[in-house]
Image 1 (tube, one colour):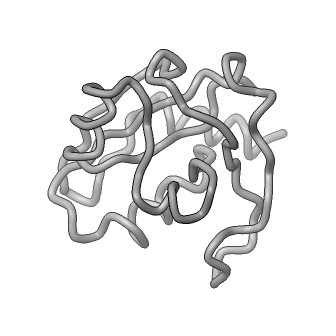
Image 2 (cartoon, rainbow, N blue to C red):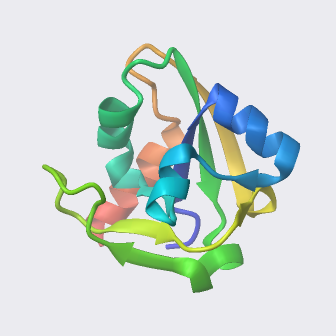
Image 3 (cartoon, rainbow, N blue to C red):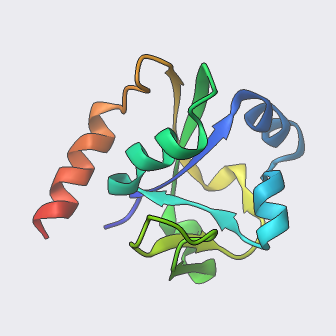
Length: 124
């Protein structure tokens, strides 16, 4: 199940990451880890946390490059979401990103590759 975790960033967060080489958001700094989502969690993540954005960057993370720092844990902050989320403890270098998509509002259309991965995961 490699390469099925994702990070969503605002355009400003992505621009900053490209300048410094590390992906980190204010929320990640506050919570002490990098918030990630699986393919099946993306729609809700986009709806809950990026509803005000006109466009975002969707980054697919190469798990092979960061597997030692990933823990699946309860959502933080707690709320209506109940599945375990991938949290990365460490510096998430942009070199760990395997795919990048620029998503424009229109209900944030998820790339077909991501939707297919979600379907494959759901069958397992």
